[in-house]
Length: 449
Image (cartoon, rainbow, N blue to C red; front, side, top):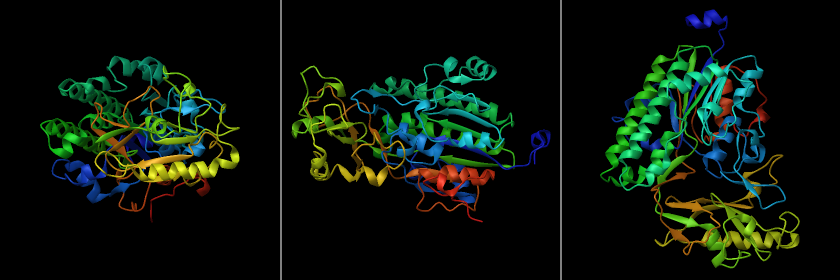
């Protein structure tokens, strides 16, 4: 028990969770000499690859990880969701997450939580000790609460996210410099508040890892000239995680996790172009840019990443598929997607998941009817501004994967086997000895006694 534990008059166990967005377990496990701190954590604690969620997209993954329940409960399915009974879409933010966050459970138990840079948390909550929102936040000024916390972050040059547009340049030097600067500022802020030692749950996310993976992961796997930029960045990540582990008091358990895995990207798949070419989707006019522009004859449409919706009568405003034809049409669409092959002759879909097998809860009314979990190499796009070809290539060379997400727990009594993203929230609560009901979660604690 440390000095601050005595000052607070508490001896309850605590947790520091550090998110490493999109870091595949194989990257760290296959390079123990390059990443000695993570190798040591795996050896003395518990570590393994876990599965993400359907779909493995950060805007859906972080609400699932931080609540322990599926998108049917959180109400967030991706970066862009559809309004109920409408073709209008919106970008989900913190207030759109309908399930209880883990830091709310901690706060309700009379304990304190510091939350930093978690995606899909804007605007910042005011019922926690301190919070700065992450991905999609407009500025530190608007994303941080309370005032003294915001002032410190602004004065120290805190950066919410990387300038991803720099990654579109052929020369990645400026992008990598910006990524390293963002990582440095994040670590400085995390270190400052970790050492305040006035929290029971510290929950912070490094999202820069995801950004670097999107633009350099294939360079790592194919060992191009930019591989060293990638490895140098990750050596710094490993060093910072090691420093964080060293600075934590003995009553704190460190948990490090990714929300999804990563792999090389070979082809972007323009799903709405596919539907248009196969006769499932048509538009009111040639100048189409959004979902609202689809015509009355449309049978199906897609939203990123790989979510497919039947244009169902009574559910969609201009539904063209009668209720009694729903199952037949969905089966037909599923078969087409399962058989889709890329230019390299490989199947695009590892599997096509039906909605009832992935989503359940009070907010499954906007759930997609089908979701493709793609094979490695196929990045699923939607896009309503016409693409001439189903398969294309863009500036990114890395993509999310459902498998191979990372989980490390600084406790040898954790069993990371057949685990997934939903297991993390109950595991943290068990480590903190915060009570919960088993049926609150889609996952289960990984702690064994």
